[in-house]
Length: 240
Ligand SMILES: NC(=O)c1ccc[n+]([C@@H]2O[C@H](COP(=O)([O-])OP(=O)(O)OC[C@H]3O[C@@H](n4cnc5c(N)ncnc54)[C@H](OP(=O)(O)O)[C@@H]3O)[C@@H](O)[C@H]2O)c1
Image (tube, rainbow, N blue to C red; front, side, top):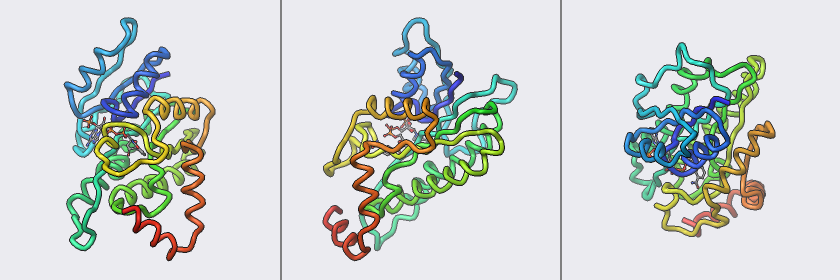
């Protein structure tokens, strides 16, 4: 398969790129840091190759073109970032914009640039977050971006069917990566990026429309959606 992955220089995307290349697939690895892409290339087994593409996803008009290239089977839009709102009264609009831009607006530009280069029967994978399931403290920006992304993915899974393109939404719980290394709070049911990669690759192989994990964590999050708002406000305030 020919597979394009954004955010392949770190965490989940890095682990996905290495796993797919080790399985013998042809991987296009996107990142915004050339030294990190070089480091990824150095980790490859001798027989394997990756096509590295260096660009910033918020530089919307300079995405690499896939024109005149072999079409891709799998497009994994995984890159993302997280920052927290510590003082909602003094709302940091610039930070809000940064997170919405990289986690949501860039997806629109990526779809514009690359969706038509997916093979018929190909698959679009959007890496959202379990944070989209519940209003979590300090996650006003991150949660809003991921809730928007999940809505977008669910809609595309309906509208792209007639174009013979499959859509998979990924909702991870806490995964140990450089992104979560920055968190100072306890992360329940934290899993490794290799475990997350295993779940994602298996789910894609099975043609799943939704890959959510760890199962127990997602089950608890989904149950909490049914409790009264006033009770959730009390619980969530204690978490923050
Ligand atoms: N880790 C978790 O617990 C968790 C849970 C739920 C969802 N997710 C989602 O999973 C995805 C991957 O997260 P991760 O934990 O693997 O994070 P990570 O280790 O920080 O990796 C994020 C990747 O995205 C890239 N990226 C960020 N901003 C970019 C930009 N403007 N242009 C191009 N590339 C950019 C990063 O590039 P650099 O290497 O240059 O920084 C990196 O390769 C994200 O969408 C995240 O929201 C993660």
